[in-house]
Image (tube, rainbow, N blue to C red; front, top):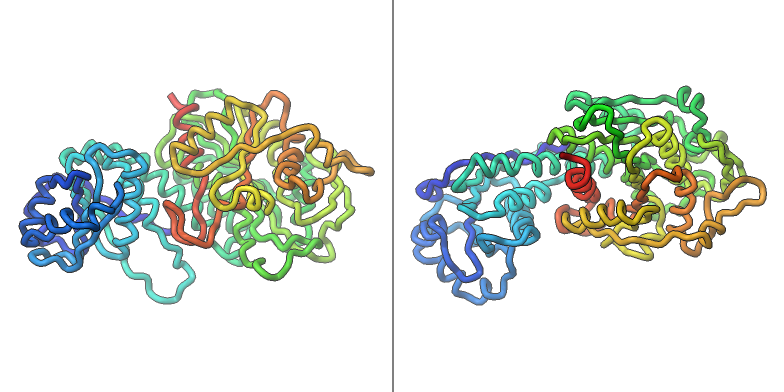
Length: 489
């Protein structure tokens, strides 16, 4: 996977900044007050820092903004970055500062003079999340990545505070790598192998092959992949860091490694983006990696259904009727509404086997959610107000956009089939809601459940707050926070 940048934590050494190469960053509060390192930088640059903060650029800058002085006189650094940030900033301001530093850092080393800033760990979090690039398939020899030295008044404490955020950032990067991978490299088999490799982190990982899925009765899931040469699989990841015997939280992911639409073939334009249709499984995998790396004191199970939706002589046809693991029959009206067929069986399996205290499924499920919410928010559907509120609170705390959508019997009625228990689509109106209603039919009555439609946020064409163009890793931060706030301790 993409290697995260390395961080070293050290005592503040004022004399060190003169000879530091790469970039040096100093923090200046909104009132223009300089700490000891910023004062030394000002002296070395013959007053350039002071002139900068007394000017219009600094006055107009917002908290977390970075102003750079290129090739500062009196210093060996290629740039001196002046960060406008209070000593006790808001979390989002501190993370923004880290993100801005990461954008400027590139391949250079960075010395961050954090001093006694109370949000040094959040600056590091922003840096770690944004310092990402996916160049695995470029033939040019990759340049070595820069490293960050955080100089601060209490390096041991800051290092300890940063351990969990850096673990979560690695989980985010793992998700981004999976979502960015082309489908000829991330097959169902190689996806399962990458997840199996996480056993070395302490996860228990099982790969269920097609023969076992057939025995379990997963006719809904298997119908999606039957037109492909790639075998369908279900991967079960368990992190057992909580009390022995305590029921786990279940995370369920749609893992369609490529989606042609099947017999209901998608238009050619834009089909290359369907490498990201395994985004839900990617997020679940990243969360499980993060929990293992930070040794979360909780029991969490991640279950992902890995399939490829291809047209062939074996493929499921519109009008076919398939039988789910639950036993319900489904009339397949549109083979491009395949994600819900995968999730239905995986959700039922997870409830049957683990009896979870709650269940969250994630899927790049519908284009309709993009029409409704754009690329700013994931759609959130739930059968339990308290469970839903706890997730929305976690998402807001981590700056990941999420918006609750409605459920209701009228929408459910749109799934009525003449020849089976239900159809897999309910028509164009309220497409994301009828998809959620379909999934709710596979939620047991006593299971708190959240469905996250991440079609608009899993991969985007422009930079986001924490990520460059491409896969965002949306959801890893929020779900990790959900676990930390509600299932640990």
